[in-house]
Length: 292
Image (cartoon, rainbow, N blue to C red; front, side, top):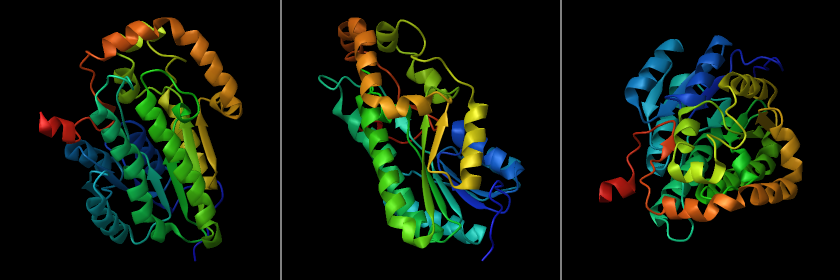
């Protein structure tokens, strides 16, 4: 069995979900530049094709991660085209503001279907292929898994579930030699962040564009590349997220106090505001849209 250098991604075979844009696309390009072989999943064929061409004509497929049979089929196909698999990055996700009382329950259902079941289906399909001493799975959670904001309950719940899946899988794969990492990002410079905090309800709570300020995407991608190379159990970006995580109860209390004044008005706005799903794959076919 080939043994990889501890600080390099060269030669690794990596499957990335949500790879059409944002974190997934940037990571694919950087891993390819570092000598990895990548395979891409996503919903936007034209964008995926462009990313694939920039990654040495990497194999790619349309795939809705919320569809278990589709995930099983596509992962099997891409692993065959790669000739094996060393790393899976479960990155695809969606978000949308939701008042827990009086909001549209379809938002919660859709968020959990993509962010939780989609990660589970991805890990389930890729797991047998990475169950070896060089294997690694990275699940993309969020600082939202640890610190919960008003109107972001669906997203926070889903990312807390992703964290739980990653921590559980780490124990279940240990005997195979494979390792599992969990990524915690704050507000990065992606389409998801710019659209997610661009609503009237969000502005009513925060009073500005974001909670902590938008961080550049580059350092986050650098951190993920290093995590893959060294099969780390935790990835954070920006750096201060690592300081917040051990003090979740304190951070939650600070947030609750700091944001309490605008919540009532924000809830009123959110119950009537037509806010879009924010995602790095904006054209995902959604059940709620098909019903409209």
